[in-house]
Length: 257
Ligand SMILES: NC(=O)c1ccc[n+]([C@@H]2O[C@H](COP(=O)([O-])OP(=O)(O)OC[C@H]3O[C@@H](n4cnc5c(N)ncnc54)[C@H](O)[C@@H]3O)[C@@H](O)[C@H]2O)c1
Image 1 (cartoon, rainbow, N blue to C red):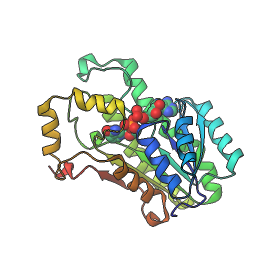
Image 2 (image 1 turned 180 degrees about the horizontal axis):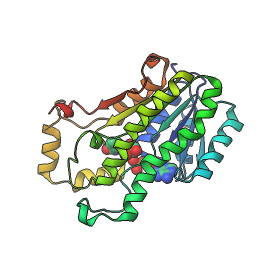
Image 3 (image 1 turned 45 degrees about the vertical axis):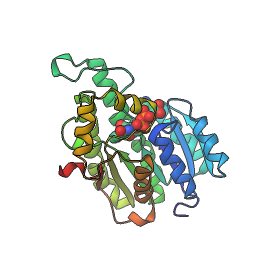
Image 4 (image 1 turned 90 degrees about the horizontal axis):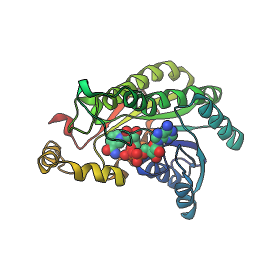
């Protein structure tokens, strides 16, 4: 067990990749706090059904008061926070235009808020506790979209900018929090079929777009969500104790193409 008794907050864990990360951390012995603006009790129940430990707490991570209350609730329950995985985010629920002249300001603000502002706020309210402990592991979630330009039309400039911002925040906070024994790293995954919404996005792509994506990937396939979760577990475990400020690309080699 690599994470025995560690208290781990995983945001955006009601479903999708967050739920996969939560399960993986729980399997390694962690107490997982499943945080989401949606109801996370399904993830909590599924983890408990496997004999592991989880607690679901609902919060909108773009709301500073809610983030503050969330961290206070976790501290009241467990008395410490060892791990924070800032996974909440995404490209948004409604279709959006990607051309600059059609950008909708409301959508821009929403995507920056759910991906970047939520990450900043969660770290802001976790940092004092981790500093007091003189230890902590923070993993932020960026996207391959932040490493270049969009692969296909459904990815908007606001999503790319938010995920580039997550990389910048990772580096800056790794520098700031390192002297307090806190590691801050970033996972940079490529397109992953992580649930119904991403399945729909994959199906909406043209055959040509799908072929281009696979052929530009040396491993010639999309990742299994567990292949991202194993990297998250590495980044929150003691195995990565001298890794900080790193942005780990998990993309089947597609950046080389
Ligand atoms: N799936 C992919 O292809 C892919 C690739 C690269 C990066 N990512 C990133 O990985 C993360 C998870 O992606 P996913 O595919 O599982 O998406 P998802 O939409 O299935 O999960 C995102 C979760 O975040 C939650 N969330 C959104 N706004 C929130 C808020 N304000 N407060 C609290 N929770 C909020 C949602 O309710 C949802 O449960 C996202 O940050 C996404 O940008 C995904």
